[in-house]
Every structure is written in C-alpha cells, then in structure tokens.
Image (cartoon, rainbow, N blue to C red; front, side, top):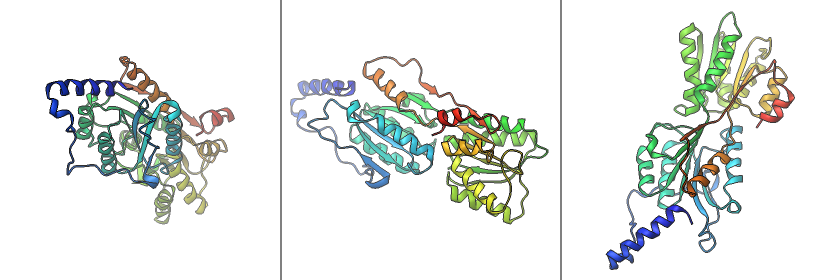
Length: 347
C-alpha cells in the first residue's frame, strides 16, 4: 500500500470519528471541469485494472508525446512500458499527445482517478501550474521525464531530463570547429515550444548572431521527415545557397537528405553540405559511419530506471538527494565514430 493511500485512510478515519454521518457521503462530486478521458487507440493505452488484485500496486498515470513522433520517442515509450508493469508492482495507464491542452486534460483525468504518481513528458514547457497544483492538493506525486517545464519546483518531486541546451551547444561548438569558409544554414526546428526545440534552437541562434552565420531558412518541420524534405526542397527550388543542414532530430535530417539526393547535391564528410542531426537512432549513426552525415547529438530515451528508483525511494519515505537528474550525453563525429559506438549508443 502506498504512503498516499495510508495517509488517506488515516484522514478518513479521523473524519468519520468527528463527523459520523459524513463517512457515507463521498468527498468527490461531479464537476463541469471534468477532464477529457484518455482515448482508446494510439492516443491512450490503459493497463488492465482489476480492483480485487491491484490493491497493493502503485498506480501511475504516464503522459507522453506521440510514440510515432520519432525513433527516439518510440524507444522512450517502449522503455516505460517495459518497466511500469504489474510484474514490477505498478498499475500503469498511458496517454499520448503532441498538444499541451490534451496532455493537461489527461493529467486532470489521472488526478480524478487517484493515481499515486503522475509521470509527465510535457508537449510544451508552459501552462502546467494549475493542474500540477491540483495534483499536489490531491496528494499525487509528480515526476517529470524527458522534458522540463516552466513551473515552480515545489509543484513536482523530481525531474529526469536531458540538457537540451547543452546538446545544442555541443553541436554548435562542433560546427564552429569545422572552420567552414561560409556558414549558410538551413535550420529545421522541432515542435515549437518544446524543451528540445528551445535548447537546440537557442544554441544555434546565439552563435549565428554572434559570429554572423547566415540562417538561410529557419522553419519547424515538427520532427517530421516529410515536412523537412518539403522545406529543403523549397529552398533548393528557390535557388537558395546553403552548405549546412541543422536538423533538430534524426528524422528531419533524413528528410533533408532525401531532398538533397533528389537534387543530386552531395552531403556528408568532405562533401557540399554538412548534415547535423540529433537523437542517435542506430540507423542515423550508421549513416554517420558511412560518411553520409557529419554529426549526431545524443539524446538518451532510457529514463524509466531513473524514475523507478525515485519512486522506490519516495515509497520508503526517503528524502531525494537531488531534485533534477541530468543524464550524461555526447555527440558523435562521422570521422571518429566506431562500430562499438553504433552498437552501444544507437537506439
């Protein structure tokens, strides 16, 4: 039985002693603000819930981005599903959306369902204060993973994240070290407002301004290969001069390369266009090793073991030694990457 449930039972006992007739009348009433239920199909996936057998299970609601968003996200979702199982002591429900307002609706629904823990990878960094205050008032512990939010630290218990700004800085420092004669860059951004987009865009924007690099095109492709291909194709059709593709994930880099191949523009090591991606999908690192791409920045999707360790400590009543855990990540250069790197770090 979780700490939250023990405290709730104790509070209920005190209330019954003080107000005998009140025990039969429930404390939750229907409201016009009832959250939208997680949908079936790809948007939400709820584990079987057998009340007769799940009393000792820790109830968690997991809100994530669309599993089909990218190879990184698929690996992230599969990692969470493999850990938060009944065999491991959890009754887990999953909800997915790339829209902040839908994720907030899911969070409200999970709070109403009296989950013990709300695990959140936010679609956007803003807009979470109100629902997280509701979670805190309801005794729901909140753990952020994968992405940060703009909210007071008192509203969540822990945050397991990548340092997206550092990822961007590492990539831009690598690009700077290439000493290109000119820097004419097509910048393919992820979904606007996400922590990954802000961090990776911010580093390039700052350096381009400082050093006078030319951003030929800067546009969101929303992590999508097809949209990225269209953006790069439009730049080619408009006869725009460029020699760098800075794509904020591997799928967008893949789409950009498809447009380059279609136009017979060479890319990769010692070729006409430098290609930069992020996430370190295995297939992307293989492209790097072949010399077709130049750089790929790591973003670690395997966060479930960190989250489980935090939950284990909180269930034991332990105090967390640190609130924010930043995973160590690196970048890979096509000229130095090895087969061992591809096997160890490819997702």
